[in-house]
Image 1 (tube, rainbow, N blue to C red):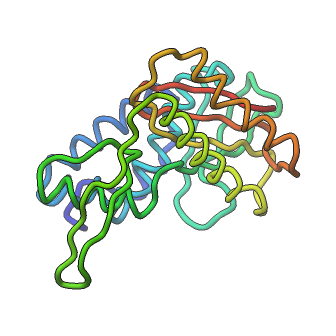
Image 2: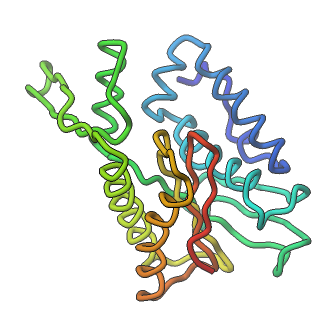
Image 3: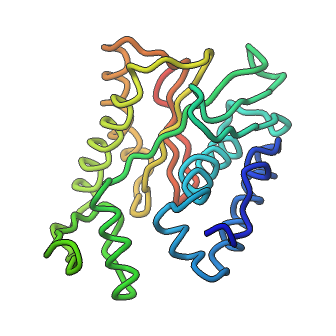
Length: 231
């Protein structure tokens, strides 16, 4: 996929929050318009993975989070270093800190959902379970259990977000650091009650464990929702 218009140096360029969000949106659209681009975006191939799974959530968080100044500078970093981005914000104390970004999604089921979408032109919702049929050379996927209520969605989302946070707790980071957890918020109706239902278990989890993060934020990828759950 080296023919796609996406380079590491442009992903890692310093930008302000709204500038980064506008750039990410335009770049994803630009890449998707190229031959093989939609496939690369859907399956996180090459640099499309950090673009869509790290930098895009970073941009949403920084643009819509009240704790980040509009004039802050965001510096994404691709690689195996102990953070995913640096934030330089004179209004913050300290004025420079780091961000770790992770996804709360269905893992292999999400991969199978993208296969179903490519083969059939449609797919069930992002939190649907998918079943695998056949083996190598004859692999097929079919929708399994589909969430049918807001309560079911909240329960599953809470489970996925909790797992995502736990995966990140026992690692070494460059500090001070915050955690951003991206999740699917595509069916949220009553924001206040839903946010309370999502945040309460997270607050309990983070207060009961050794937590390396100054703050933890949940970022809804559909509605550009930002929720701070501790710190």
